[in-house]
Amino acid sequence: MKREDIDRIAAFVGDLKCKTQKEVEEARVRLLGKKGEITALFDDFRTVDRAQKAEFGKALNELKQKALARIEELKGTVSDSGESGAPKADLTMPGDPFELGSRHPVSIVRQEIVDIFRKFGYDVAEGPEIEDDYHVFEALNFPPNHPARDMQDTFFVSAGHPNPILLRTHTSSVQVRTMEKMDVPIRVICPGRVFRNEAISARAHCIFHQVEGLYIDEGVTFADLKQAILLFAREMFGPDTQIRMRPSYFPFTEPSAEVDVSCNICHGKGCNICKGTGWLEILGCGMVDPNVLEASGIDSKRYSGFAFGMGLERIAMLKWRVNDLRHYFENDMRFLHEFATAPEV
Ligand code: DAH
Image 1: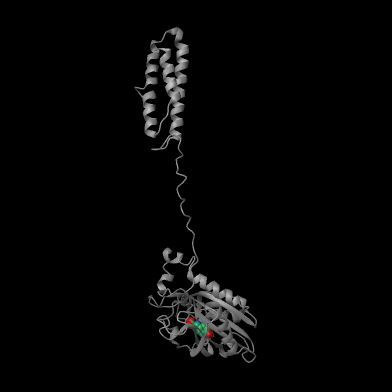
Image 2: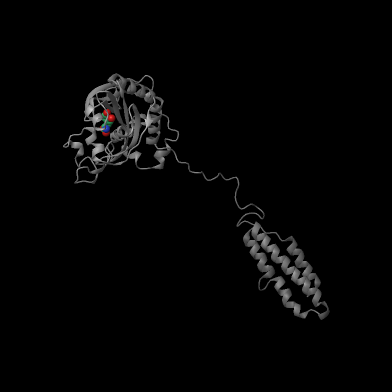
């Protein structure tokens, strides 16, 4: 072994550059592998003169440490295939998008309705989804044999006793709970989920959402009801909106009406959305039946009130023309994302 051999390899290590991990491994094998150049020098060490052993031994160990350090350094900076020293990530790549949720169309509509009625001075009231027959039917003046109590329409949780537990079929039950709890005057809006035993189709679902409204005070008249609905319709569907009321029947209101708004697509001329009539049905309403007031302990001689109820999916359908109810429940992100910036039609 000559001193030059050590210096030559030391110079090689000093200049060592690699472009890939493969080249780093090749350099390691060349220097420190079983048949590597530094390994060979260690084998030759036996032949070194005694006098030079200390000097050569020190130089050899330093060379080995230098080679090991350089190989480790290159391993850490060379990419698998790229240039030595290049960063491992391509910083010019576009970032991974951060998935943001968007509000559900039913939530958007509920918030709009709540905001409109808040401006008119209504409070928000909520009640339980799992209710009893009394609050869903009896206190609302449903006769015992009314078809809505039938197993066909109502999901019963427990039946077979005088006040069965069931999933509420409408948010009118919150009217009753509010009248029980609050003193008159009452002005509340009650959004919530309701359940009916219906086969799921484009036009019907076993779960949907309603908003109930209730206003009770001295001297409340049908004219007040009409005005409240007209103001709401204009806030919701635009300032030119007209309403019409058709006589109807609900056990808990007398008189009762169904309300249509003028079709905001054809402006009353008739189109396929309004089926040529120029009108779209949006809600049911009426003057609270005195029996309903009395059942909840309100003096029907002194007080009167109106109530109304509407389906949120129905309003969303009118707003965005999504006419298959099932879309509102399937949680398909492609559908939901449309409402992040959806313009109203
Ligand atoms: N509860 C009715 C339904 O589910 C909607 C309704 C109609 C509510 C008339 C009312 C009302 O308060 O006055 O179809």
